[in-house]
Image 1 (cartoon, rainbow, N blue to C red):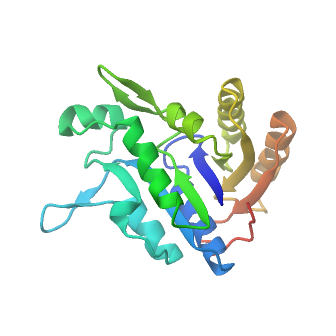
Image 2 (image 1 turned 90 degrees about the horizontal axis):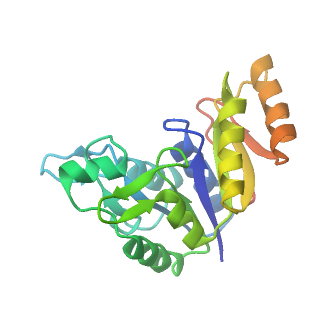
Image 3 (image 1 turned 135 degrees about the vertical axis):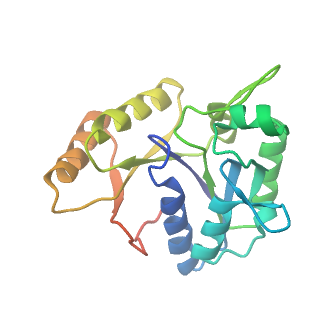
Length: 218
């Protein structure tokens, strides 16, 4: 059994799309792949008033995963807020043990599990009488972490800050995926080189806009 945790240098960098590409690639290699998102914010209600968990539904459909959406997340909120703030409006704050149990239940059913975090790596899941950071889940899982970074201007700074944060907390980093990559763009090419040199880690693959497949073996 293998597993991978996907985080990013910030919100809307593209970790859901990268997660979907990884899941699709592994499914095409013959593995039974699971995907899990502990906490999902910014979801839309359907005509019956039920939340459609957008990120999870997208990955399931894109990669043709066999598991039900309800088994691929622990908590979902309508507001596109940080989870700790969404719970102040909607209730149902995350519980660490439930998240870990849900992940373990799905892990037992698949050959490879991709867990996608929320926002950037520093994300408070709960901040009331209990204090739960996304880092607490990453530490408890002890999975290798793939960092999704944007290829454009500012990418070096955000990539290295994310790397240093994870290293300072003794988290195992697998490497980087650069999203929105254009091999004809000198900034993108230089960012790839500099991120590798400054972090001591590899850019494992790049993703161009609207790319439908990758060749990546975690």
